[in-house]
Image (cartoon, rainbow, N blue to C red; front, top):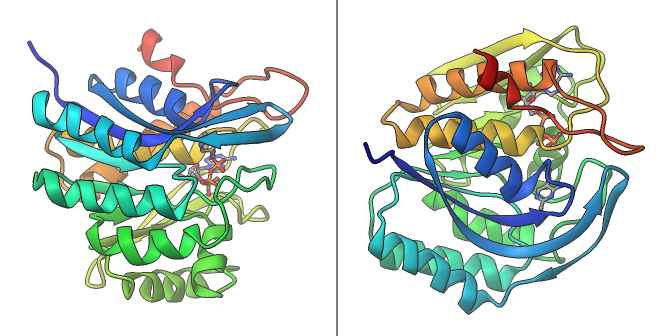
Length: 266
Ligand SMILES: Nc1ncnc2c1ncn2[C@@H]1O[C@H](COP(=O)(O)OP(=O)(O)OP(=O)(O)O)[C@@H](O)[C@H]1O
Ligand SMILES: Cc1ncc(CO)c(N)n1
């Protein structure tokens, strides 16, 4: 049987734990065929990002057109987009394909070690060009701060930030709480302005969370590709990332990756 398809528009992580590598292994683990529009090649390992080179914007656009016109896209996600020019090309191409698939925008600004994955001015382009086209956006707390100026420290500020982010035009917002390190639970807040869903799970004691945000967003995208509603897809994504953090492994001298391998032993 032909599986559903999910498209990732994102960068490559030479360390294999984040970026398109995280997306493809998560799509596979969720029974979805992964399609790729590569935006950048990063040079990185467990210690951080040493640099990146972006793919020309017209080549990013051509990759999206090639797969969308021939293979069909059931859902898509964006990760590292590198430059404002690529972001504009992605927005234009998504409009031109005029396919009605759900779009998850993970506004990746920096790696977890703090290295920038976006040229200056590009986060603003994600906000203006992609958020209005997004079914769901999935910022972490650092990205929430950059986008809204709100510093999330508790459930009230998490809710205010979610409401402020909705103003940028996406249908749903998921404010991830992984970076609120002094809480016993990891609480992510999902809202469309009417429904507020607090997704709570244990915070595992591990330093190895490389690729966690990408894995969550791609697990959500895979569920959307299979026809789930946004609340269903986010709940499934949260379960998926929880197990993947619980089974994260050390690799290299720095931060190891979250692991989707647990699905092989189910
Ligand atoms: N230690 C942990 N234990 C359990 N779940 C976690 C842990 N850390 C993060 N998570 C969950 O992982 C997902 C990603 O959250 P986070 O806020 O860390 O995003 P992120 O910063 O984009 O990820 P990263 O930069 O690590 O790729 C969220 O669902 C969050 O609740
Ligand atoms: C290529 C790439 N995309 C996203 C992230 C964020 O996890 C990363 N470290 N590298």
